[in-house]
Image (tube, rainbow, N blue to C red):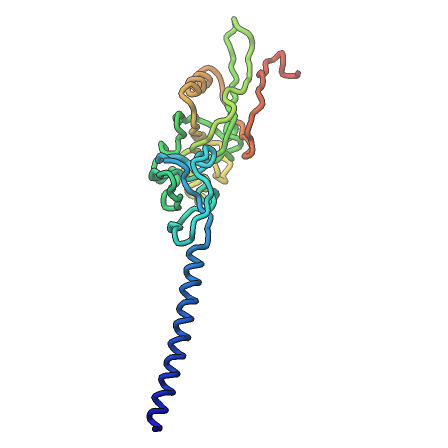
Length: 255
């Protein structure tokens, strides 16, 4: 009789334990399902995107948008804000509806400058010292005005200064193509003479500024360099429209 009672008690305890474990398992499973179903905002391609497009271009052209996706379907390294891939270019093409991931983007220096050139443009480099390139503070990704001064021959009217190109993107400064490059060591600064060197004598050393230009603007800039002098003026990051000017001559400089 006693043994039967012990067996009954053991069976009841096992049943209670099993019921408790089952409830706990169901609660955990429900929590996991709810977590997996929780919406997460990620950037998704709105159409097919070719390799080489910058993150900024994708956003400006509406090629990527922020969408809510269940957590279970969020890709590893999914991009939730374009600021995390700022200055980078798409290393592999994207299909419409595909999530943007960090692994898809690289700095231009890692995959070649040609992949950071906007569609319909070409890259052209000009020589520029600190005076020409805003005190040596230009960075890839900046936008500049290209200003030209032409000095006609004696039979023509006097010199004229005018904005030649109103908003031009800087692709590279010297060999620097990254938006936020690592600081150069003192030895590198002395040997390269690139923008950012702390030595005054190096800061005057000429570098090259590579710009993204349309073929027609390439002709204008080459002609301007051959026939006059060119300077660059840095535009603010928030600039959208640039006022149109008529240029200045000796007769109109004080107007």
